[in-house]
Image (tube, rainbow over all chains, first blue to last red; front, side, top):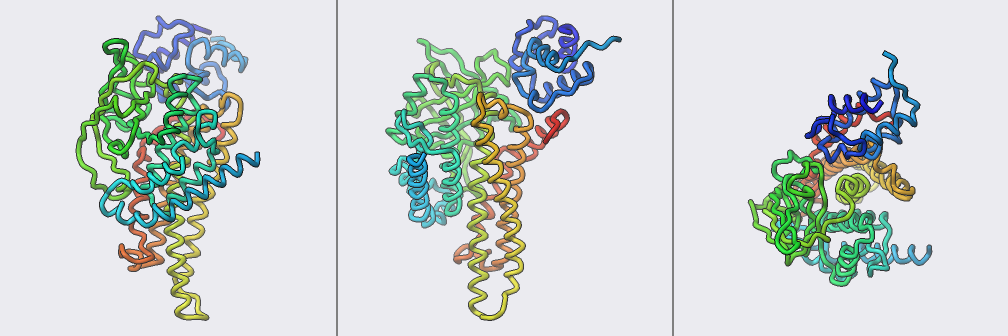
Length: 83
Length: 391
């Protein structure tokens, strides 16, 4: 799951650093992700993992690192797509 | 409970008195000469109103947020510029109080503010960011002997020349991303303000808001501990939008009151007949009540969310949309009410020297859609709406 999240961030996060070099707890916002880019990351995560983040989870702290995103997806019982 | 209610009532009564005795009689001159409302701010200082929100343990008044909002409304009814200066100062104070995280420097600063009734201005906008408060160009830079320096091109600094201290958003360091922002509180003796441009605007003329190049040398402790994005989401943005909208409501309410006085005067001239303008006044009342309802409900929602542990909900996109909507709705509705009042009063409202003049009200409220441009807020909302669910 970590690698899939990393790929989504690489595709949509518009970071100023290489996404493959991100540590699980690297702050994505400090790495240059704007709030607009974060919305695109959220949309891609919902699409890829077939989940819907409830409004209570739609806040900065939930999407600020790969580890935080993974924890959030875990709460939603998201599984990696089979294909 | 009753002690704090008494304290809040005493504070609000004092502000109402100052609004009547200082803000109202000087409003025309402040507007005409585009001068700072010095009499009103001095009177507020004498009542310790500049530290009203500071906790009593730090020497302040400990007044509740809703009472500060009510004070903005009352000042707005008498002089929009005075109310805006008061509101902007309170926004900085409230942001510090809610986010100082036991910082000894900021605790001592608040005590000094309470003792000396220091006035805080802010430099949050910047040349080169396209009006986006969430990005900065200027950065905190390490200087000599452990000090820090910065230089910021600020397109508008309201009452900058009249303030004691300045609240400035900056990048955390020269190599930080534009969105990696902190807030710095620089004191007057540490500041150099180089004026850029003039100040001869359509409305809110007494806020005296020309541009400046801001330079300062500060101590590292003068950086607020909480990062700006969190201060912004939990306090600065919602508090700004709530206090601004309260004073816009105050201006619109006074315009309505003038229109009502005009209709009553007409009715007295022809007893037994309802003047035709009374019908327009009725339409205007429903416009004003829409504005009032939006302003009051946003205040209630903010207070409720602020009382939750960790204020988590204030960081959600749904709440960002909520307070952005307040800003857009109130900034569009307030000038609409003032224009409606002009429609009721006719030429007597159009002239600047009658008891029914509403030109200043209309011009002052027309600044509302520019203070953080509504189109910029719509852009943010458009993005958030792609993902937010229950709005």
